Image (tube, rainbow over all chains, first blue to last red; front, side, top):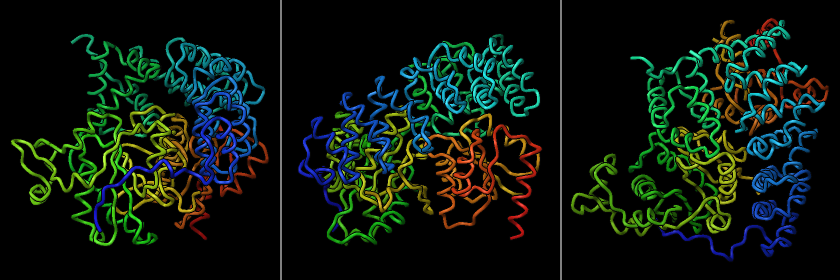
Length: 210
Length: 281
Length: 124
């Protein structure tokens, strides 16, 4: 007994019970296997197959096992094509809060691919979707971020959408946001949170200029 | 001096929030001098005369290279034997103690140390087990250590170290497990043979498939350098590399709470580690 | 001094609640999402939790469910949300919230709730 030299896992040891081929057809079959471990490995390897996007999106919405969902989400993020983004955006309208938040989480990691959808999302009739869109701006490396945020705090009627935007302006705001921040304070004069957040952003912008 | 760049209170706050969100590392006010100094260093290195200019670059740079450089400075990463020793104590006194309660004697316990770097960690674990885990007489333990970099793997297999790397190794252990080779110390052959070194890219699904059935994974100070998606994917691969109930140890400035919700938090007297649920399938 | 954990992914919201609660004499700690909150309570439990619903990695529901399963001294939790539907309120209460209030909060609404939840807790 004692320390023994370990060995890597042999190729004959296959995760999950079924020995499916690792080509597209085999992986798509394994994506519906009974064993969560087999589904996870299939979802992981499908990241290399953009043509599997629709199947991954479909499985995501009915997958009961959180660990498999997470891997599907990662693979969709990796694929990152328009169908994958659309599939993830569709999750924002679901009742299932866990899936909704998980989708927001990964969309934040795809700022460039989400950017083309941004205009529409910021105008969505559902304020929660607009809040999410502002959340995604947080990670967006895009020259228009500040401009979008200024538009939101100048135009959006919903206090919580503005609250989320002003929070982010505290980090990325510059001189050009000042006027909009001041008028936001007037528009929501009786909301202590908006006063607090706008003042904080203004203070930080002032300190920047100094 | 005119135009000497400064970090204002507001700048510090803003930076602190951003860095915390990105890495999970939170700087107290008492660390202000430490943080300011490093920020000013990076501002100078990147030719930014104002904090605003630097912060915009840090935040919006597509490659994330500046954030990495800054993380490097803030974490002061050094490899030496018995670095963050409390986790080895946790391994012996808590994790292994729990693992053996549900493990038949004929099934070896498997430990994975990744990245191996130049080998200080896997050899350190081996020494620690030999010295502090009496049950090693009853159980087999396999240590595998991996790195993406073949040249560093070669160094690790050689096991040759300078004075600095072994400064925290107590004298008796230095005598017992090392040989002097000129000005350097070489890990004795018996110990070198106890560790298997392999090349692994943790982002590669095929590489990960050949590294499974582990009971404990040490992955310290690697994920912090990855972007969010790579971190999440690696954590998901580790999930499948672990046996149910297996543990994962991250570096002290890394937080699983920024990475993945798949693991359970376990607080042991020595450290907080993460566990794959026992009932996981 | 009573200890309150403020759990929200928005830094400004955490700061806002910190100031309100500290002024009222509470000791405040922060967490950026449900997972970090679970790490924090492993160090020491709190007297009250102020929990946002929508957060990355582990949301408010997930945090509360995990908290309520722990074998540890339990404490009241206030769920804060931007959503005003009955189903959200119901889900928050089922997950283990004692109270559900809407964002943005106001000090004059929030503080009486905090005080009464802490007071009730002491009596039982």
